[in-house]
Amino acid sequence: MAVVKDRPDTLLEISDLTMSFGGIMAVSQLALKVLTGEIYSIIGPNGAGKTTLFNCISGIYKARAGSIKFEGQEILGMPPHKIARLGIARAFQNIELFRGMTVLDNLMSSREHLLNYGLFSAALHFGRCSNQEEKCRDRVEDIIELLDLQKFRNTHVGALSYGIQKRVELGRALTMEPKVVLVDEPVSGMNLEETEDMARYILDINEEMRITVVLIEHDMRLVMDLSDRVAVLNFGLKIAEGRPEEIAKDPEVIRAYLGESKN
Amino acid sequence: MGDKFQTSYKADMALFQTLWVKVWLGIFAASLIVCPYFLSQYQLGILNEISIAVIGALGLNLLIGYTGQISLGHGAFVAIGAYTTALTSAYWGLPFVVTLPLSGVMAALLGMIVGVPALRLKGLYLALGTLAFGFIVEYVLFHWDLIQGDMGMAVKRISIGGYEIRTERDHFYCLTAFAVLATLCSKNIIRSKIGRSFIAIRDRDIAAEAMGIPLAKYKVMAFGVSSFYAGIAGGLLAHYQKWIVPGSFDLSLSVTYIAMIVLGGLGTILGSVLGAVLITSIPHGIVYTTDLVKDTYPVLGSLIVDLKVGIFGLIVVLALLFEPQGLAGIYRRVKLYWKTWPFRY
Ligand SMILES: Nc1ncnc2c1ncn2[C@@H]1O[C@H](COP(=O)(O)OP(=O)(O)O)[C@@H](O)[C@H]1O
Ligand SMILES: [Mg+2]
Image 1 (cartoon, chains in turn green, yellow):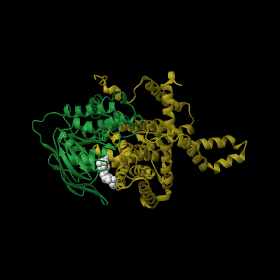
Image 2 (cartoon, protein in one colour):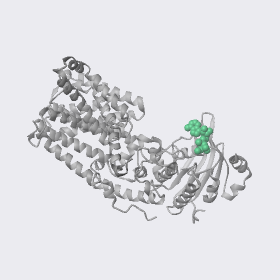
Image 3 (cartoon, helix red, strand yellow):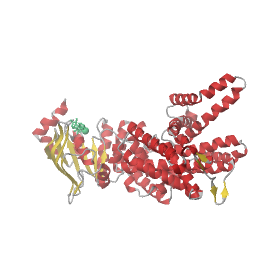
Image 4 (cartoon, helix red, strand yellow):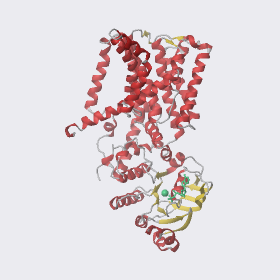
């Protein structure tokens, strides 16, 4: 369980969100609130619309109707990079790392908006550029340490195992210094040990770095252990929301989701 | 825990890291300084051509190799640089220290103007769009009275602070200095946030955006920087050749530059340099072989002359078949081999 909040504000508020592809309603009339500092999990069967929801928040998909407010500001319709710069980071379900770069450069790449020097200073590697790069490197090293990536610092990401790539994916979101990080199935395809490591990282992010986490995950034990609140999606609709122990008992949830995961 | 990288990041981020690299660069620099005393005028001429090609290739590699934006219009930006130099020095009498940067800036501005509509294009469509731009520039070069179309334009020699560069050897020092500067700037850009953003856009544009990288800004910037390099190459070329004609800036120049970076290695600085060296040398190599065999096998000699373009193409195709990563790929493998040398198997 994550930290106790003394004053929970709404960080992210989604209302009436609808997104369809041709005839398929991937997300329909969805409403949810994520509170500052919590770990909020979204579960649901494959194709329920979870990733689509993340893509709408990130601005990668333009939702047809509804509203997405971040810290009270409407972000629906904003371009993805502006949304990211407000403090919404993203770790993708299917690894979307920059394959031509080392781990270090991947982690540095998401700090573009935190570095304030121009082309001229970069080309000559002037003081302004080199000082800022050095500071940037220092912050990135903190994340490298947090995620135990020291050994892989200078390895090209393509040469890494799937589990480590997932970790770099999370790391690249964290080096943005976001307020909230959207994590899409961080432990899918991982073994038990890797899963336990990832669970610890997510707790560290939330408790030590004080970053709000929105988590999509199929691993029910992980969700039950980490989450403050859980929402359940099915066919684009939110069918339940509540504390993990309430969700585990909800008959509709058991029918829609837990039942299915047995096969 | 407690494993945070402790040594100064400055050392880790330095451009030339190991003593070996520094030693080799020292040797390379020394040989550049003394080589004019050992080479013929003709050989120096080839090196001068190479220096100009290196600058152009570095620029194109930033755009195609690093940012993933195809362009068939690079030759047009070289032309813009060359004609900016010719016009501003002939009609306004501006000195070299002004005309050269102006050539770069002029090409960069037009590059950014091309870059904006190019935001909507990808892959083959982008190739076609930049091709069209190249044709437009070519048309203007042939038909604009001021620059005398087909007749071409005379260009003054480079003169810096009253010293006029005349000999092949002086040109060698001057052009090599520009090529080295261009290489260092390129390397610096690539290791900055700008280079990381370029590569991010090339590798995964959607993820790049989700990481807060503004695609439009960096794509336009890539066009601008790449064209700036082309403009500088063009300006230097104009001075060096002393005479420019529109015909030398057609599509085949753009294709030659693409051949350089593909053969040298896309997305590597070293590749831009090696590719420029190789592609510029091949025609001279062919001429050299022809001269060698001309007396003993006259038929073969004239055959080579006839098939010059074909032989050129064949060398490029074969090189790519055997080494798709380009010359930089070979270098990487050799380096890896030596790095692991005591443990090699
Ligand atoms: N880009 C797209 N084009 C068409 N259909 C899509 C697209 N993205 C998602 N969908 C559809 O939307 C539904 C929800 O998908 P998704 O959000 O990926 O589910 P989840 O992440 O919950 O497994 C699925 O039916 C999927 O096929
Ligand atoms: Mg999904």
